[in-house]
Image 1: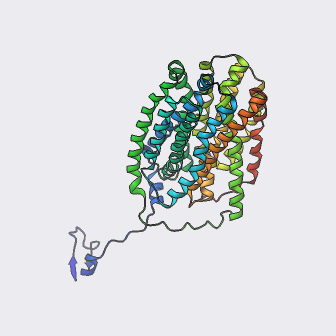
Image 2: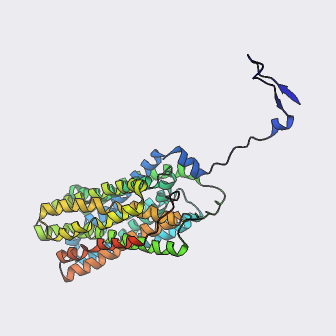
Image 3: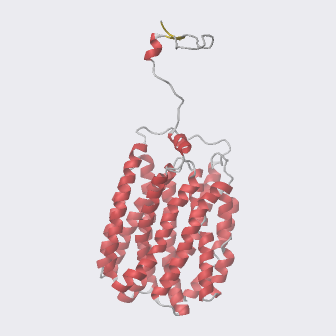
Length: 429
């Protein structure tokens, strides 16, 4: 045994400390801290959240160019509304089909550099779209851009949650903010660049894809060390968590709610330009500015929805976001030009605030399948938008664009289904 006595001014309080030889060689044992707990204690990783949001901005800016150049493609190749809808379907169905598959795979084996690789598909799709001279080639180019989206969204949503520091709604909103603003920028860039310089100018936006590849590669380097080499332990269900039957029902309800929201937004995104041109006689560039105003309002609403869900509960936000837009969607088909612009802003602010809450609610219902659930819901959003655009285009060919908006005005009424959502335990939220 060895004796160590600390020099002291007061022998009464400074007693000898006895340390055995075995103790000197024993490892120091500290209480276990899980990565999730450590991240939560550290707070959000703002640099990572900013990077993934900027990447989402760049990704969705490029994707929104497709819908923004529809008037050019329609006039150049004499396309009807059904063919325009098929372009949207080719882009969004590819993303819809593959996103759950990508999410399921990365739940089992994370791929930190897959985001950069997926962005290369978008890069190639833009180049192909800029030189496409046949309708089939346009469809293939749109499908390649959709493939990039399929790889990007599930894994980037996982990274946003990993960097959230426990503020899941906030992190999802920051992530959604980038995408929403990117979507809103497409019409502006189309009006300023693509309309004056033609279809070939789409190739210039491949530089945006290259920048996104660089950012995503750097995020992949941050993400790689976060991945555990060993399998994580099975998630234990909370005693107050809903039963598996209630979980399935809740997921179906969330899909229906996302259907009502996304199909209405898709109707405005794909055909709002034609609606304004046909009804009010505005120019293509002016109509694209009006579309930008609506999409920018969507971006603002998407940002505030997540933090409000963290603060007041996601179920309340979902209720207000879907049903709250109903009076304004019902009024839109009968409003004048200025009133239509104002109503579109109000609708965008309200209805887009539900996206983050729906996705985080779904993730918390199935906490061990974040990638798959994110892929399913992002995929459903894209799939519904694509299928809905094709159906609405066919309906517009047989009736009119104004009739389409009169029908779509009732979609937010589906928000009544939110009554079937279960109440999650507080520590799950």
